[in-house]
Length: 277
Ligand code: FPP
Figure 1 (cartoon, helix red, strand yellow):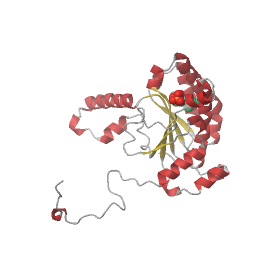
Figure 2 (spheres, helix red, strand yellow):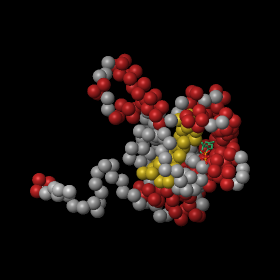
Figure 3 (cartoon, helix red, strand yellow):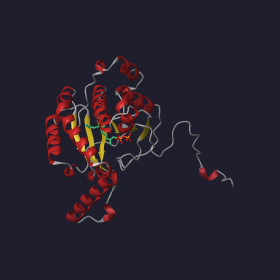
């Protein structure tokens, strides 16, 4: 069971505090997922090499995580490296991202401790280089007892491959327990996803203006509110997370039902005439 994080509002910047003051604390999302996009363009706009965009993006990861931990956000899940990135990006860029991840974990584990942040991972982690996996497990072990925000990095992750892995594992379980296919429920599928231990995201943020899901958390975002900002990830800060949450709080979540101000419910639908078009 995940413990509720302690609020550290006094540690927000004055600008962040001003946005936080507009939020309804009882309606904070439990889980925010982010597609961090635009590192390359951020670098391109400055005539810099792409890797400098990623380096600046890593800074945003730390700062946004710290704001999340100060407002007591229980779950923050960041798309750091997709299966497709691994397969389709130049070898040099993939290798740089791996080195950046290792160095990020080494240099930020103390700040995670100071902020009561626990780090975890989702994705086909076993396919990453061994020395990167070792560093990941090291950071996960050190922060395992923290009870504030759980920062989950999606690494070598793909939503479809997550489902393939889940269905394989569910099929094995069914075979062993002699369960018939008719008994499979949504809950069974949820139990076999990488995210079985966490709630589905309430809010999905995508930076850099692209209107795509990019194979991220496909099962989990069925009813997630989506917020797209033109801001590139290296320019994204805690205040922008708070602004996205403010926007989220203005939405009405209906989960396929009907909301307020959507017309009156007819008591006796049989009385209603259907107009021919
Ligand atoms: C998308 O930008 C970003 C990535 C593929 C990698 C995300 C990595 C980071 C934010 C930094 C490292 C993270 C950690 C946790 C250390 P892009 O390169 O696709 O940008 P573009 O679309 O503008 O080219």
